[in-house]
Structures are given as C-alpha cells and as structure tokens.
Length: 143
Image (cartoon, rainbow, N blue to C red):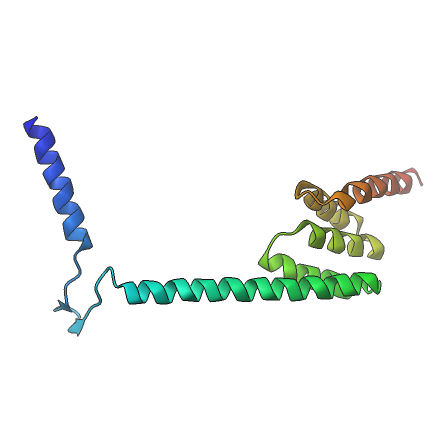
C-alpha cells in the first residue's frame, strides 16, 4: 500500500511539474504564455476551421472544373483539375474522371489504378469502367 501511495504521489508531482508554465522564463529573458491560454486555443481552432472551409471550397471548385473539362472531353485539363481536387480530399468521382482521362489518352495502367481506387471508394461507374478497361487490355495483348 505504501508503494502504491508513493507511486501515485510521484505521478501527480510529475503531471503538475509538466503542466506549469511560469510567467517569466529567466533563461530566455522574456515572458511566456500560460499553457492553458484559452484565447490562443480559440485562435488555433478558428484557424483550423477556416483552413478546412477553404480546402472544402477549393475542392468543390476543382471538382466542378474537372467535371466541366470531362464533359468537354478536354482530358488534359480534366486530369489536372482532378489531381488538384484529389490533393485536397479523396473522392471516387475525381478518381473516375482522372482515370477516364488517362484511358482516353492511352495511359491504361494509370487509368486502371484510378478506376480501382474509385471502386474502392464506392463510385459505381468505376466498376463498369474497370471491366471495360480490362477487356480492352486483354484485346490489346492478343494483338
């Protein structure tokens, strides 16, 4: 019992000493902030929220631009904008668009990777596209 009490006291002392931030750090000759400064925490949380909102807005914009390029059959731009959207968030539709662009340009290996990823993310059109691509690859190997 005595050992447990000593262990608990040591743990508590360790926690308290780690959590303390002094009002003035003599080695740095400058004041320091309180470790639990709620103003700083709130600023950090607001910054994270603003960053997430910006990323979401950029993702929507790049996704829209990729879809427009896809509809216009502008494969280079579709790949570029899908890449930009995918750098922000993973999305099955963007993998499908990029894969279709690769397939249309003749990059079948890259298209297959993107279709598989889109399928894994639950994008239904990628299942049919992957089957079609596999048949296309088999036909090319026979030649």
